[in-house]
Each structure stands twice: as C-alpha cells, then as structure tokens.
Amino acid sequence: MHGGRRGRRPVDPPERAGAATVLGVRARDLAQPFPIVDLDTDALQAAATMGRHDLPGLVVRGADGLPLTVIPASQVLRFVIPAYVQEDPHLARVYDERAADEVMHKLAAATVADVLPKKHPDTDELPVVDGDATGIEVAALMARTRSPIVVVVEDKQIIGAIRIGALLGQMLPSDPPTA
Amino acid sequence: MTATLVVIAFVAAYVLIATERIHRVAAALWGAAAMVVLGVADVQTAFFSERTGIDWNVIFLLLGMMILVGVIRQTGAFEFVAIWAAKRAGGRPFAIMVSLIVFTAVASALLDNVTTVLLVAPVTLLVCDRIGAPPIPFLISEALASNIGGTATLIGDPPNIIIGSRAGLTFNDFLVNLAPLIVVLLVVFIGLARLVFQKELTYDPNRVEELMRLDEREAIHDRTLLWRSGIVLALVIVGFLTHSITHLEPSLVALLGAGAAVAVSRLDPHDYLRDVEWSTLVFFAGLFVMVGGMVQAGVIGDLGKELTTLIDGRWLLGSSVLLWVSGLLSGIIDNIPYVATMAPLVSDLTGGSHDPHSGPLWWALALGADLGGNATAVGASANVVVLGIAARNGHKISFWRFTRYGAIVAFVTIAISWAYIWLRYFAFA
Image (cartoon, rainbow over all chains, first blue to last red; front, top):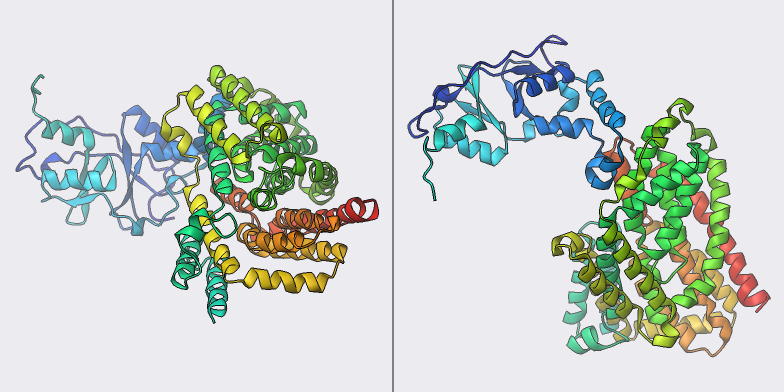
C-alpha cells in the first residue's frame, strides 16, 4: 500500500472544456482536472464517484505522486461480480434482486488497491502522456492501452486527464456529414 | 536399427508430453514427424490404415460430442439441474455434496469430464457462496466424481473412446461391464467423502434461505432450444445403445447428433464451435501416428509376444498387473497417450489368444487409466480444470491438498475394481 490517507475522498471533476480540432492541439490543452484516487482510497467511494459523475474510470496515484495506473469502471464490476458468474452467464440470471444488491457490498470492505488487477502495474504501459503530446498521440495511446482515460503529466505533476469522449469530441467534426 | 531409432523418438516425444517442456500438441506432432522421417509412417499408414493410422472413429466421436455439448450448454440446463439438486438437499452441506457428486458422475458418463466440471464448478461456487460453506471440498469431490462417472460409458472418458474403437467394444459393452461397478464405486466414494471431508463441511445455517431464493428456472432462457437439444441428446444415446441393430458406429452417431443439434438450434457457428478443443483433436492425431510408427516398426508386436509368453495364460495376473500399473502411471502422466500406446499392445495380447479370460485386459486398462487419474492433481484433465476454476475464484487448491484426497480415492476404487475383475471374470466366470 503506497501513499495517501486512508479514506481520502476523490476530487470532483469540473465542467468540460470547449471543442476544438485535434490537429495541432496538445495534450495540455485537452487535459481537464480529473478525480484522482490513491491506492488506499475506499473502493466504495471511488465507485460512487465514477457513478455520480458518469466517469469511464479513475486515475490512481502512486506514493511518488505520479500516476500509477488508470482503473476503468469495468474493473470495479470485475471485482464485485464473482468470476464464476462472469464465466457462466446463465448463473447471472438466477440471482435474485437482494443477492444482486449484496454483491456491491463487497466494495465496502475494499480499497482501490484491492480492486486493481493482480498484474503488477509496472509490466503494463501506463496511459500517461507528456503535456506536449499531440491529439493523435493521445488517441493512439488510448487505442493501444484500451484505456478510456489518458493522464497528462508535466514537471512530475498530474495536470489533468483526457477522457475518451472529450477526445472524440475534438476529433469529430461538429456537424457530421449525413449519408 | 530402425526399430531402435523409432523407440528413441517415441520415448523422447513421450517425455516431452509428460514433462510439458513443450506443449503436448507440439510434442505429439514432433513425434509423428519423427516417424515419417524414420520411414515407418507414410500417407497410407498414417491416414488410411486401421492398424497403424489415425483412428478417425475416435477423432470424429470426440468432435461430434464436443459440438453437441457446445449446443446443449447454451440452454442452461446443467445450471438448472445442479441448482435444483442443491436446493432439494435443503442447504445441508453433505446432502448438497452428495447431490452434486451424483449429478457430476451421471453427467460425466454422458458427456466428457472436462465439460461436466466446467459446468458444475461455477454452480458449486455459487451454492457455497450462498450458504457460507468452503467450496474446496465440494470442488475436489466433483473432480473425483467426474473421473469415476466417466469410466462408466464408452463416451465418458477419452481413454474409453480409444479402447472402444481399438477393441471393437460397443457402448453397451461398457454399460454392461463397467456401469454396475461404477455405481458401487460411487456409493463407496460418497462414504469416503463423508469421512475425509467431514470436518471441512461447515456452513452458516442462517444463510440457507439465500440458497433457497435462487431461481433455477431463470438459468433457462430458451426453452425451445432446451427441448430440441434434449431430444437430440436422447436420440444420440439411443443411437449408441442400438448399435447392434443399426450398425452405426458411435462416431457416426455423434456426428449425426452434432449435425442435428446445429440444425435445430440455429446457433451461430461461433457459439457451438467454441467448445471444440481443436488442440485435443490434433494431439490425438499426432499420438496415433506416433503409436502407429511403433506398430509399423514391429516394436509393439515384439513386445506383445514377449508379454504373451510372460503371462502364459495367467490372465488374472495379467489383468491385475495391467490394472495397477495403469492406475499408477495415469496418476503421473496423461492417461490419453498412455492408453493410446497400450491399446495396440493389449489388442495384440487379446487378439493372439482365443482364451475368453483375455477379454478382461481391456476392462483392466480402462479402469486403471480412468480411475488412476484421480490419484494426483495432474492425473486427469478434469482435476486441472477444477484447480484452475478454484484459483480464479480465490480458492487455491494446492497439488498436495488435492493429491491427499485423490490418492485415497484412487487406491480404494482401483482395489474394488480389482476385486470386481477377479470375481466377475475369473472366480464366477
């Protein structure tokens, strides 16, 4: 377990930035303040933040203050839904409503560290870019790492994150041509 | 000289399969290629010879059953029956264990063991979660039950399919000769499970209601598919049982069943082909060519003559040695290559003798190879699969923990099988 206070509350996200073309735009221009959690943040709080703000994931910070990884919302589901139910869809149907509610209680006794995949984060490419990265670099990194969020770092400080929705908003024309 | 080189290549490939230094499919194909290079396998001997080639009956029986299972498992019927059985047991751990053991054994007799445990283990984890019971005793007992139940029929365990094809034994032969013994072994196994798992069968009586709240009917979301595939499975079993009338080989029955299941299910090919273990089929093909090379080089024939001389009509001794050695070796190495190697040897032994007492050698081989797989955690594919499912769900079962129980069950069931062979085929023959 690294850094941070236990039970630290994630920071709420601000409003979205305005749209602009992705060509020539740098990551620092696309970055928005984003909720950051530590390894010992309560998993239930982290999940609630994702749900409340409709976030595709959260940035997890390491003890050194730098991004350790990004935890996608689907990983939270992977943690609470038993593996045997994930592997056998027929079993998901036999759960009654009360049992379905109970699975979420698993988060109450867990921290973000518990929810992370068991693989060592060092072995994975981190979805982190420098502020100078171009929009296409960010898009390529998202595609490669399958991460819905890319963290932007400058001078060893997290200056924000880019959400996939925001990036697509920049990349797509504001008035898509009709067929 | 060629025979020596063939033996060296065969042993080398076998060591690679047993030690898993490389994937078993690669090892079997390497061995098959060596036979071609050494000149003891060619297109004729590998693909078209019943004696030395790929046993297409085995390959297509496996393929047909895999496709059929691929369709049936889409119905959720297994989950339905397993949850229903657990609920009928009233939430009492040992009663649940017995119902799941019986269900696993019966299902394993009709399907392959790996598929059965793949379907039963998740239900077991759910049931144990609901009543607050530790799932490990249940999972271990199901792996052991699948190997015992699979021994009962021609299609229950891959070694039986090889033996049936090589020996010309029918579905009914297995049913008449092995199924009665397996019923006895299951009863004994349930008693053993009571003894060895008694202390571990704890649960929370206050949570039984959570098990009872599970609605097993929800597992089935396509009743039409259930009925259609259920009828196809029933017809396939009738096809196996009526071989003496229809003269349809089991492989053809399975393929017809697979075709019918695909036709009536209208599923996407991806859905039913997902359950076909192509690597297993290729492994079998490579093995048959490897063993065929040994037959072609005369090694198996010479070994058969030596053993015939050694046995010298003492078939009880021969059956006993074969049963125990097969049991011992199957606990250590994969029983599929073992039986693929032994089948032509036993065929030589029984074929060269007109003594009816030589017949039990086949049953000794089947019982030893199938039941011996219970001895260790790596003795049978079902054991490995159960250990994998348990680990993914946070319940690690160590090699020794499994083996501690498995070795007892393997020893007791093989000992009873030996008594059965002696009584049925020799003492009261």
